[in-house]
Length: 128
Image: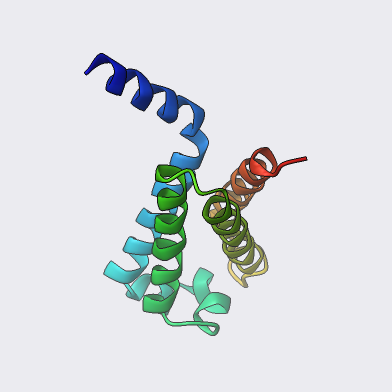
């Protein structure tokens, strides 16, 4: 039991930032699916809502987060690498769309932070 707990603690500490990215992305995707009126009616999502439906956007975040989580669980460097790059891309698209929204907002800062987090994780996971 102590060995299992020690291993779990080690993985949690080593992958802490990845877990933050994964669970934030999954929760964000769930919120978009659970409350589609956020994307459909809030003016800050005006640019994003023309690209894809709330359901599709939510599934992208949930899917990429789950792929990253599976990559961590099975120590699959390809799943981890490509899912974190995809998460960095989707968060950066959201960041740019929020930044250039016709309505002044602060949501772009959260998206920028998530993008920077994903890029930092990707840089640590790439073999140099």
